[in-house]
Image 1 (cartoon, one colour):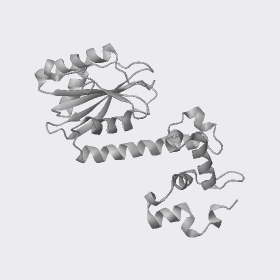
Image 2 (cartoon, one colour):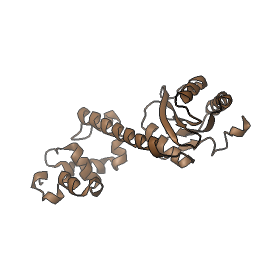
Image 3 (cartoon, helix red, strand yellow):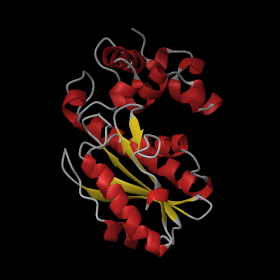
Image 4 (spheres, rainbow, N blue to C red):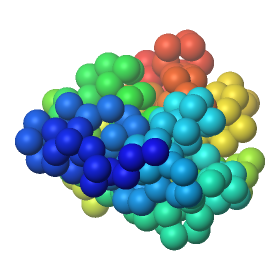
Length: 231
């Protein structure tokens, strides 16, 4: 086993990043920078590759539970908290960029943002994308956090937040921590209730999107379970 410092300069992750940029590094090299040190008989790059192989890839490692993460060799509570902070910073950075520039004018663009912001939550979370009349993103906001299986949606509270952001439209969203994005009757009923609350205020409810695991989601509009024209 060679230590990182015994590698040629061009093969050391930090130096390689500074010279070529982060996109030039492999997943193992990026993870090695985060790990900083290896363990007995493994340098940081070798440990990183071992962890990726063991978990089945970067996504599985990053999404590991606290308990599962801390059981892995070379990791622990300190690394878990550091990683969660890094992931939160990345989500907030991405959201800040989107809030400034993005138009949310189709389901895939809404789902991509909502999945990034909601899929990692262990409990059910109610959120909304607040848009102007041109469907430009004003803000993403978590409205309520509930239990593993439910989180209440209050139409009046949602209307107050829409007024706060001076929104002309919004997309309601919540996650299903179970991974099954199938809507319940209650999900459909509250969608119509919210739309009826918002309509006199000249705020359009464009969709209600349920986020599951991975790429799983249900758009009530796509599923023909919600039609704003029937309000």
